[in-house]
Length: 287
Length: 284
Image 1 (cartoon, chains in turn purple, green):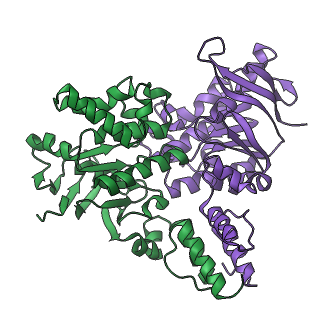
Image 2 (tube, helix red, strand yellow):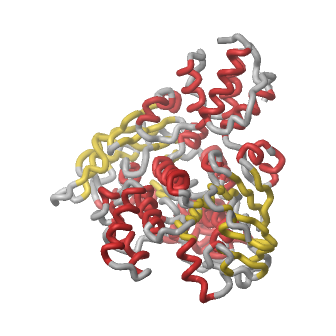
Image 3 (cartoon, one colour):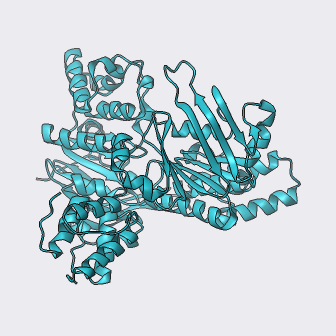
C-alpha cells in the first residue's frame, strides 16, 4: 500500500471571491515507503500549495490526501496527527529559528509532541547527528551560526519529530555550491539511515536527478509530467519549453543531437556526459 | 585617477564590530567605467562586504574607496556617491517600500526632489527598460521573485546611476527569474553603458562577464577574464568554487583522450567544440 496517496487534488485560493485562483488542479500521485519523490516547477506552479496539503495545513477544495490509506481530513484528530506524521520543512527555514539555543530549537517539535525528556534528548542528538551539528554547537544561540549551519539546524528541528514522511521545500535555495552539496548529501544519508520516505521540492533538475526515485513536474497548477526520474527527464525538450532549468550537460547534449550527433539526451551529470560522448569514439570514460 | 576608473579600492580593509578578523583585507581593485564585472566567492568570502563598501553602506576601517575620485569615508559625500552607484540586494522582499509598483520606482527620484513631470518620465522609462511597464499599477506582493527584482532594478535605473551593484540578486529567485534579471543587467550594460558589478555564486552567471574577480577569505584571489579564471582548476578548488559544468565536461572529455579546443564555458560553446572534435575525428 502507498504511504502517501493524493487523489484528484484541487486547491483554489479565494474560492468564494471574485479573485478565485486555482493554485493546484487535479493532481494525483502515489509515494511508496522509502521512496524519494522530487517535485519540480517554476515559481507559482503550485508546488508549495500542493505540499501544504500533505500534513493538513491546507485542506483541498476537492480531492483527497491519504496517509496509509486513511483520509487525513476525515476528522480533526486525524488531521492533527498528520502534522506529526508528515514533517514539513519550509523554504528558508532558518528564518523560523527563535529559541535561545540550537538544542532548544531542535527540541521544539518533539516537545510539542509531549514526549518524555529522555526521548526528546535522544531525538535532538540523533537529528543533530543527521545534519552534522556537533554537541558544542547545540549550546550556542542559533543566531551565532553560519548561514549553512542555521539551515541545517532548522532541518534538524523537523527531523527530530521523526516523521514518517519528510517534506523539504527548496532546502538548497540561496546556498553556495558547497552548502548545496552538504544539504543534498545529508538528505541522501538520512534516507539511507532511516529508510524514511522523502519529498523534495526543488528548482534544480540536477538535485532531483541525483537523489529522486520519482519526479513530478508541475506547470500552471497541473501535473505536466509524472513518473520515474528517467521517464520524466527523457522529456528534456518539454522541460525547457516550460522554462525549467535543464542541467547544463543535458542542454549540451540536446544541442549535439540538434547538430546531428547520434547521442542520448538523458544525461545530467558531467560523468554521464563524458561517458556518453566518448562512446562515439569507442572509448570508455577514464574519469 | 584615470577617467576610465569608476570605483577605486586602495588597500581597503573592513572589520565588522566585534568580529575576530577582517571580512575584507587589503583589497586594491578598480571597477572600470562601462564594464561588466563578476565577483565570485563562496559564502563568507567577503564579496558582499566588498559590494557594500562601493556605495558607502560600509566605510572602510582601513584604506580608501573612491567613487569618481570622491572618498566614501566623508559623510557629506554619501548623497553624491549613491547618485552614482546604486544597489540591488539579495532578497526581493526586503527592498520594496511602496504598495504599487510605480510608486516604488518613483521613491528614489522623489527623494532627489525632481519635478513631478521628470519623475513620471523616469519611472516610465525605467519600467519599460526592465520589461515591467505593463505591471506598473500592480501590487508588488503579487509579482514573482524575478519580477520583484526587476522592479528593484527599475528603482535604481530611475536614479540614473552610472553603476549598479547586484549583490547576489539572483540567489533567492527561480531559474527563470534569474535569467530575467541577468539579461536585464546585461542589456543595461550593453545598450545604456551602465557599469555592472555582478556578485554571485552561480558560476554560469559569470561566463559572459568582461572580467571576473574571485574573492577568498577577504582578499582578491584572482582577477582575469572568465576563460583565464575558469581554466585554473587549482584556484577554483582552493577557493571552494567549481568551473561551469560545460567546462568540466570539456575537461573530462579531454581526460578521456579526445582533444577539445577552447574554454567551452557555455553550453553552446561546449556543444560547438564537442561537435567540431567529433567531425574532425570522423565519427559523425
